[in-house]
Length: 179
Ligand code: XMP
Image (cartoon, rainbow, N blue to C red):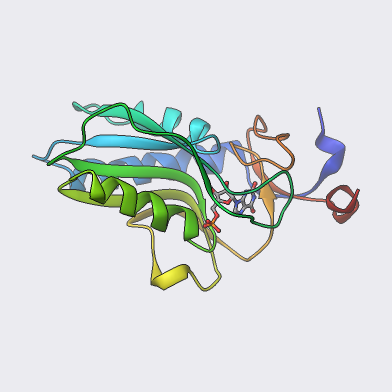
């Protein structure tokens, strides 16, 4: 694999598994007695939401929304919506699931889009929340881990579309980022 490109593992597979268990338990409690539509933000949230939904033994609907903000590097560019929702979310409780809350620009826009479709409530769940000032103080309602403002890969997160399949979350060597 590309393990020689990894600088440091921040969260190994077992640590992620245990934390996803806890986040799932929080979600179960929070949505007790409510309908639930989960929306995966493509592509980075795929491993996380796949693990999450299998720990939610209750009725739920699943949809995906496509958003791309990182054009092959580590610096954000303008957000492009690449796929719209298929399900009707009017009057529904929607939980948007993404890999990471960085500046918050992506989730702010997605939350606005889903609210404008008439959702009754839109909450946010991210695996990682970066300790940086977020746009308009947007915070995740559910999160896995808080991390310092480093660029990370693995468990869905990519650098130039690689490393999404790593079972852990890690930083990349500076030489790889600069290459
Ligand atoms: P914003 O800044 O809009 O960013 O909150 C959210 C999206 O940007 C990507 N992102 C990252 N991707 N490592 C990555 O692989 C990172 O450290 C990182 N920080 C932000 C990600 O796609 C996220 O949905």
